Amino acid sequence: MSSNRLKLNAEKTQFTGLGTKYQLAKFDGFVFVANGSVVDLLPVVTPLGITTNQELTFADHIRQLTGRCFRCPRQLRAIRRMLTTGTITALVNTLVVS
Image 1 (spheres, rainbow, N blue to C red):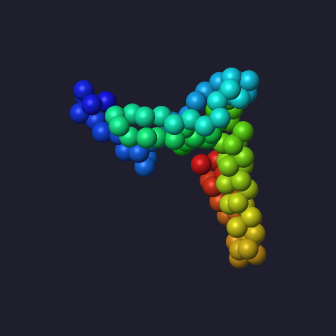
Image 2 (tube, rainbow, N blue to C red):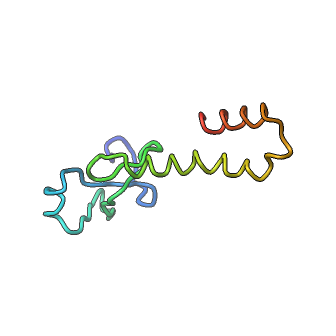
């Protein structure tokens, strides 16, 4: 990083250790030192908007995604009497598909 004139932002940088449950059980607490900055190794990281854990499963990401998908239709329930069926269908398709 330093050879390319890049600086580590410890507040935004996330590191994790990857492996199986057996391999990860060998390590209790991880601390990573990069360019003199101490960065904790996290159990769950979010690179490029996708939440992954140390075993590279997407269980946390799927849980968050389904929560967001169900939140939009639940909010529409409050105003459903003021909208037509076609409008509600279009809103649900737009919000959930996006």
